Image (cartoon, rainbow, N blue to C red):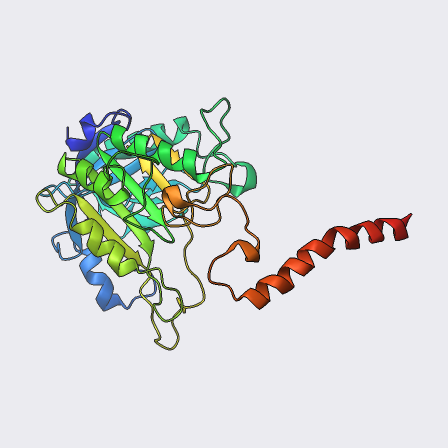
Length: 343
């Protein structure tokens, strides 16, 4: 009972693994008796597909036995429940599994196998700290003495992200509202190796899996150029093809469906190997790199750090300069008169 997930560091010990049939559509209530027949017939496999299930200490996940692609993970949260029996599952030797996000039915070959899985589910549920009610109705429990670091400016944040990407061993997951592939993460630097797209491309070609999700912008409204972001990143892993990019959501105008024009996701996260997570709200894009000097524009070494009077700019007509200089000269006198009036 082993699989590729059995040996991934940091994912915990597997309580139980095995090949089980999974119902692709478990919503049989409300259907006619004719549509219920395939569910009731154990010989009919059209509604079942066999997957490899892995039960960990806090979640259940299944994967394709042939390709090792991971399916939807189910957390053992406060709504986690398991039921067995034909009346609950609509099949022999079945187990209905439910949590806050979804419901699923699995079907074992024999009653003995079903009992073993059911007992394993019960043990995992009883040991899990996720099943209790947590503050703010969260799925996660409150944990003490966790390692955390605050970032105030983009300079320290992006430098830490770059170092995290370089330290990745298996995967990098990034979500952004706006992602600029050409943004430099560490400045100054001798070459462009610390440019985001080059850095991700280097790690991808070294075998690291990179997953990116960005907001699919409406070009006529917000010019984030997410299509350029996707194309640019995909070209950075031509051999391994280890960079995957999703632009979300697709914008639908179909009547009766939820409009995607009224919202955009703003998740700004970078997760390294599911061990280190950068969260809180800094996009890896232009205009976010910043220091305590708070430069006005993002031009690397040419950034403006001080405000200039209009008279100090070039190409301004002389008559306008004289008017503005008169205003500047009169400002101290106006301020002094205001102080005298207040006293």
